[in-house]
Amino acid sequence: MKGRVELIELPVAEGSSLAGLSLAEMYNRFQIRLLVCAVEHGEEVCIPDGEYRMRAGDRLHIAASHKDLEAFFKANGKRKDKIKKVIICGAGRVGYYLALQLSTLGMQIKIIEQNRQRCEELCELLPKATIINGDATDHDLLVEEGIDEADAFVALTGMDEENIILSLFAKSQNVDKIVTKVNEDRRARMVEDFGIDSIVSVKTATADAIMSYVRARKNSQGSANVETMYQLVDDKVEALEFIVKAETNYTGIPLKNLSLKPNNLIACIARKRQIILPSGDDCIQVGDNVIIITMEKQIEDIKDILM
Image (cartoon, rainbow, N blue to C red):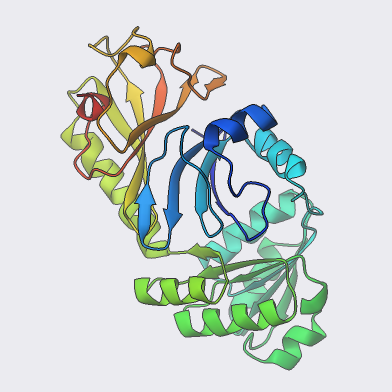
C-alpha cells in the first residue's frame, strides 16, 4: 500500500508487559490502531483472534501505520533513539539504492566495498556518503571505521557466510540494529537462532514479485486482482494485497456478516487516502485495496477466503 501500512515482527520477551495479555486486552489497553496478523511460537503458527493470549517466546506480526507503530513502541517502553549512523558492507545494486534512500533521510552513511572501481563510481553517485575501499571482513577495519558507534549495520556482500560473520561481529560490538542478507533458507534460520532478527532474502523478494505477477495475470478477469504478495513465517503465511475492481457478493456487507474460513484475516483496507484497520462494522467497497493474511496457498480472490 505504497508504504502507508507497515508489517513488522515483534518478539515477546520474558518479562514483557504483553505476556499473559489477550489480544483484545492489548487493544483495549493501548487504544492504538494496530492488528496482530499472525503469531509464531517455535514451530507453531496461527492467525489469531482477540482471545489469543500472548506468551513469552511469541513472535507477533503486526500491521499498522508508521505513526501508530511508534506510538505502540513508546507505550510499550521500547522507544529508541533514531538511527543516525549506518555502516553498509557491500556496494551492489541493493547497497547503492539503500544508501541513496538513507542519505535522503539525513543519515550518515559509510559503505565498505572491496572493488576499487565500484568505490570510485559510488563517490560520484553518492556524494553525501563516505565510501571506504577495503575488506569488510577485516575486523580491525570495522573497528577503525567506528562500528562500535554505529546505530545500524547492514551486511550485503555477495556471500551468505560473510554476511553472517559480519553480523555476528556487529552484534558483539553492541550495534542495536543489524540487517543481514541471506539467501539460503537453512542459513537464514541459523542466523535467527543466533539472535539476529532482521534477515533479507533477495531470492524470496524476487519470488514474491514473480508470484504476485503470475497470480494477477491468472485472475485478471476476477473481481479483485492480486497487487502484491509477501511470504511470512518461513513461507507458512501469505500477505496478499488485492484491488477490488467490481461489485461482488462481499462488497458493501459489514465484515461481521461475512463468514471467513479458519486461518484467514482481513487485515487492512486502503480507501483513497484513508487507512482502515477494519472492525466488524466496516465494509469492502469497489476501488479498495485490501490486505488479506492467510495460511492457504491457493488464494486468488477475496471470495476464496469466504465460507
